[in-house]
Image (cartoon, rainbow, N blue to C red; front, side, top):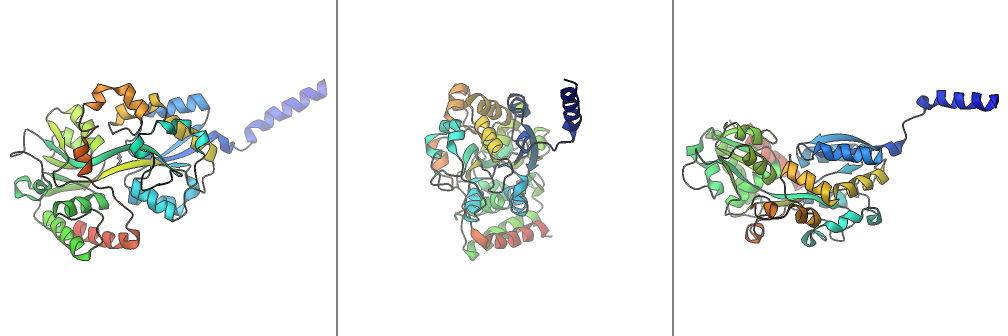
Length: 345
Ligand code: N2P
């Protein structure tokens, strides 16, 4: 009896010295302002798994980090064209969908997307568009074209998106070209347009997550934003409105993926399944105001979601938009061109 007590005591003393079990953690790498913190708390409470939550601002920044240190992340939230790229680079783990039953809630049109055609590597998290958030009390006339971003009328009042594919993409679209073009002459025309916009003093700032709050505060007249950031801002300032310009834009999907090198793949699947639960997907959607790829969550949200064109754009708007595709190594050309824009004097 005494012996047993000593053994138990020794074991109890050793307990704090044991390394933290790998199964106790999930390393999540998601966009800034892209989750309801309560959802993370609920996951931790229910599973006992600690969420180590890390954030990124653009796909391009995230790609560098995931490539450099893929084992640091268990769940990552890249956009479509990045998933396409990561699959080609063999960076992703095939998901065991038996562990992710809530992936069945995915909207039909997103079940076999072109970036993950056999639906092996990703579960959609949110989707949306790129457009212009504008102050209805300070614009001159209707805002329905990208053209306003290049007009002197709005000199010093335009926030551009500091995101290479988005900004090059909208300039290409305005000129009537594809957002996925690799034609040097078309890329040069788009660059020239953006350089001139900067030289003419039209751009107030190139930024990403800051635009929504600055627009709420009335600090600019036009801002290029992703649709959810637009809806978030509109909720806080009724003078604001959002449009997907008539020349067309980008429609995107962000998915949840697991790097092949992930240290906690089982927890990753638990996390992805939790985020795809109808109530949790609803909670996130209502908090961040992006479009949900989750049919069961949409059913819970009902009319308020369905009747909001920023969250649920018409088929016509979607059909007029393009998905980005992986442009292979030509991204280095984009990098050079974008640097020309940012450094233009
Ligand atoms: C919100 C992130 C939006 C994701 N900060 C755009 N794909």
